[in-house]
Length: 436
Ligand SMILES: [Zn+2]
View 1 (cartoon, rainbow, N blue to C red):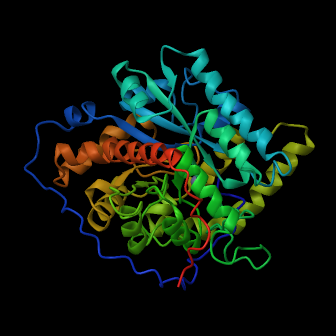
View 2 (cartoon, rainbow, N blue to C red):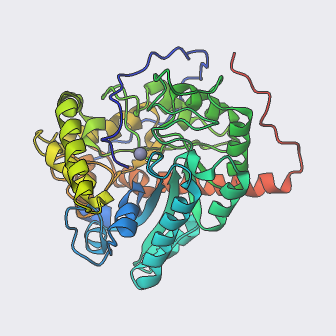
């Protein structure tokens, strides 16, 4: 997703402290003596990234993953170089541009992923399950998965939700930066002109979560408001995850998660659950306060200039695609010094310490962000993260967890929960749970 049309929002006042979660009984981070080679550790991992917006490039710019990057973060060559095993292609529908046509746009984006896989069956394989990810890894192909970013895509229809699952979508972010009819977003929660829910999720919103649980579609709480987050955690019968969010204690963005939220994800899913995962977002604005402040300070000038430029292009009859808008943002972002890679590692480290080593992973947001830390220019640079973690004392086992095993465990549990729920004929327990 892109950032430019969004209002700048300072962290909302967070009245919702009512839900006291028990202190996490996480295992400590294992700091063993340095293993042999960071490259070997990285190569022996199944590397999974849970968020890339490359889909829009594929659909609108007809970008083919065999091409050079041309300003992007992800293609087959970079995935291979970075030993990327599985990518979740984001199905993100711009809520302003596609007003009235959310489902159509959703279906076209899904089609773009399937078409790319059909064109290159030797390099990329449509993937539906944790077992499929492991199989793709053995076959040295990129496992292609899909996640819908924003519940507005279902147009208030559980039937559409089920259709998307049938087409291969395996997670849904309940909201993008826009609130919908049944869940609230951190992106507009302070906007008095936007209608919000009473309790974070409406009764229909709870049904959506429950139906996702029953289908085996992972519930993604990146982007949602804090109240919607807590309501979702207590509603979901399966553990929940954040597909692309970082730590608010380190960088004060409402898109990031507080320490209490990190622990809540780790403990989500109820008794017997192994909990969810927080997949760290690489965006400079989510991992560095100084970068974020500079970007926000630049906003009035940037937004005015971009608006004028787009108006001029449109007047000239030029097709202003996602790639063009993305490139424009990147030019502005380039005026701000990039944060060092160490700040991204700080976020991974913080989440590993607060939520537990079993509850952190990677959600790059490649091709949806205008800037990333120094050294991370494409998927080819993923091994640098492993090397930096090892330098900080993370063991090979810990690195493997962060790189993909934590997510695989979570994905397996979501699917196992669905299998169990499908055998139960019990009434849907989605209505009635009230926050104190
Ligand atoms: Zn996003």
